[in-house]
Length: 110
Length: 113
Image 1 (cartoon, rainbow over the protein chains, first blue to last red):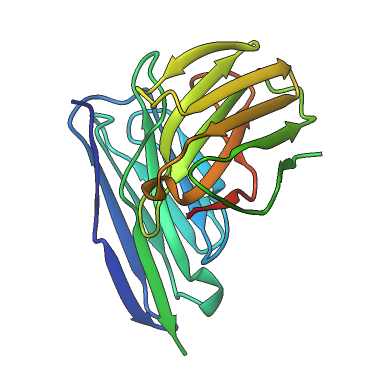
Image 2: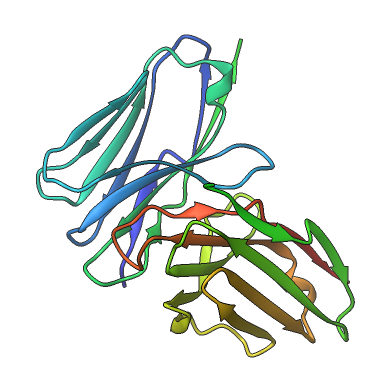
């Protein structure tokens, strides 16, 4: 079936270190979205990537979509304690509902 | 207004009770969703409404019954639930059914005793 794999499951970093989470789909995606869920909170939309090879930046966050539109990554530069939470990638195949990855939970110690 | 509201925030119900979860959005979105989320897991899609019609039912047991009274409201009726149905129930909306970002409500934390 349709799957979106995400690694790592957990990541602990020291404040100021970088962090990356990776997402892979078994099939080509129409687009990929990234969400952040703070502890005790709900998922909040971060960004959507649509084009092959697309790179988008939001301050310290860099999002990439692979050339074959099957993989994506989220990189955070110089993490801060406010970055704590679970980051989900979620992909659309043509005409299908959004498929969520299992998420990467980031913890940051100061 | 980019807010999706959900009531109640918390709900404790017995296995013989009937209760309803409510969701509202005023963004003019035409797609609305119910998700179930267990601890440390991703949201799991239950139902999708598009233009007030049920378009996806992810093989959800009949003890969960969705309803979309109008384009702004989404309900989830609960009856004869099991303890394993305890979870965070999230409502979301989007401009269209595919290719659009989803806005999530804060969720209802449901405990079935």
